[in-house]
Amino acid sequence: MDQAVDKQAVAAASAPLTESEKNAIIGGVLLSMLLAALDQTIVAPAMPTIGRSLGHAEYLPWIVTGYLLTATAVAPLYGKISDVHGRRPTVYAAILIFLAGSLVSALAPNMFVLILGRAIQGAGGGGLFALTQTVVGDLVPPRERARYAAWFSGTWAVASVAGPLLGGTFAEHLHWSLIFWINIPLGFVAMAIINKPLKKLPIAAKNHSIDGLGALLLIVATALLLLALNWGGSAYPWLSPEVIGVLACSALFWGAFALRLTRAGEPLISLEVLGNPIVLAGTLSMFLLQAASVGLAVYLPVYLQSILGLTASESGIAMLGLLLGTVGGAASSGRLIPRFTHYKRIAMVGVIFAILCMGLLAFVAGHSSLLVVEVLTICIGLGTGTTFPVTTVSVQNAVDRMHLGVATGVLTFLRSLGSALGVAMLGAVALGFGLPLAGEGVEMAGHVVSAEPFAMIFLVAAGTLGLGLIALTLMPEKELRGHVDDPAPILAE
Image (cartoon, rainbow, N blue to C red; front, side):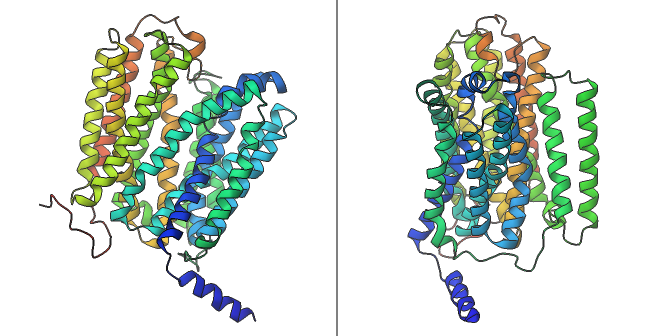
């Protein structure tokens, strides 16, 4: 009987997926990714209401920090787990953990339980980011994969716009707990959509194991690093014993993790993957480009309010230019990649364009109109948006199927870490000029009259983009795998 069941399971897994099943899987994982993305944006507008309702408002930042710490730390772990145990059970586990965190958050009687719930949410949400791209990597060959980049960018854009609107509406007119309750039905819908077709995805590395000690070392090292970046310049001075102590502890755990990679029989992150020059350069470029992009997105509203005199809601609307530009850049890049032999040049041209626009924004920061700022930020978004499909496809194309989850997890991990570093880095520049930290711009609107600190912030962001361009330039190109009947790429030398 058991053998018959096993044969049926094998037959189901080996059956080819139809186009409708592929679309159902992609739609389902994108919906799950939207859940995780929304929970990074929906909470901020409701935080004052939550503080008044639960008390201990001094711990409000941890509602965001708790999610960020766990979401970033677990991303590489999910990639490895999905390679060993299969995508379906791993995606299900990530969604269920996320929904459990949502339930704890919605029912939280006090601030500390809410922070715990957010940390649980992050432990699931971090996996959803990595697994979504990994599943698409399973379904679509690299030459075609970039076409889906617009869907990923569009998902983030929807979360960036809808999150604050929903969060503010729920907190003001209904109840703040609805920002967590809404996840429950959407999560079960996503699971229902992907349930049957995901069974057909084969397990990439059945006979491999997971290094539990290595996973623990990575999670602790990452959490400590992010904690130091979050504390530095806000809760404590950068050179305070608290920040230096946490950074030192993080360094020790990173050292122990590096040692474990060389000693473990099967390390959490394969040395073959880490030693791949495409993976190394691609993930490093994504890390730097994301640091500049997120850092700009955090301090641009402060500039719009402080220098151009916009209100908080007006500056939020003005941010749509950057978001839509990023989506447009990713969509254009994704469509062009299959047609170019030297597809890396698409991202290089995009980054160069973004650097020039960022430098021009710094030059005109003190005497610019809203129209000029909007045009420049749209152009910056277009330029940086081209990099996301190129780096993702390049990294996934560089490894075999057995390591697809690990490589995608590392890329997601460094992208999230770059976001945190970018906010901290530009936060240090802001503090040096007496500007508010990230998230405090609304309270300071109208109080800053000098554009000099913002010009410096934009220049630092441009310099970071420049470092990302260098890493991108050093990334080797490998011919994209694809269908034999695909049209030949153009512009081949």
